[in-house]
Image (cartoon, rainbow, N blue to C red; front, side, top):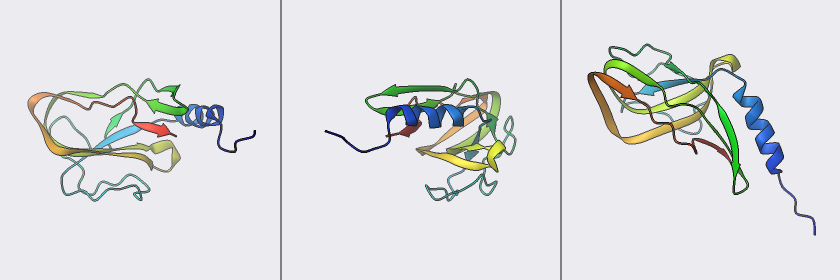
Length: 130
């Protein structure tokens, strides 16, 4: 029997090639209009506050792995050590590829820091090819 489909090896290869790029994570307010059709980074309704600058945070230490025929890409969770800001979601985007977006995340709540650390927890399943 032959079953057609994209191979797991191909999914890993695509994510490994993608992981060689630079990535950023931009934070957004509740007023942001972001969805799966958002093609690139936008500063419209981006979070503002002490410790955060427009354009977002660098993502570091990309990792690719396979689980149950799905390939995953993730990074270390970025931290703003001292900040005063609020955010409802984020965008992971690639500045080295015309600021193309690759993931939109929503917390369905407002997260706030006041003169403290702001940690963005990146789920291991953040970017998945299934």
